[in-house]
Length: 224
Image (tube, rainbow, N blue to C red; front, side, top):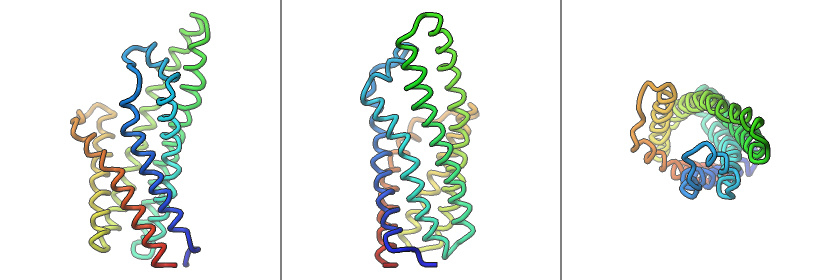
């Protein structure tokens, strides 16, 4: 079945939008105010750059998932099983990250942190329990996020590897991020320590998403 004209182009635009959101996630935190203590972390909510970071994180899985659905639509002709299962795992990743960031944005920040700043000492004691306990919930969701992302990346990597030289480049990115995601998964449980250079490798993710956008845009031109 041939998809309507503009489908891949819309997915490409979302891939490039995810470049912007990924850059925000990588670099915006360098502008956060100091937050070494509990009180300072609560006050983060008042910083405009932190709120912009939260909204970027919330929007990121939406645009990224649309681009990954576009990739699955392209790969379904060559490797339908890999494309279908891959996009299912990416869907789990995206939905879980949407949930995690919705809870972070609304419950943790616009709810509990905002309330903490304008209430009495007894209420603050209860809210501090919520805020501290939320980190364990967020970590649990993060474990699912990185595990599902690793599986989706692995399956897309195998599917890409069966294609052209450019697709093999995309496959290499997918394999690298599958490995990184599994390392982060192990790190959640404290089974390994994540070396600092691992985070530096993640900084190539915007390039990967930009190349995916080019791949989708090119596909739209070829099928148009």
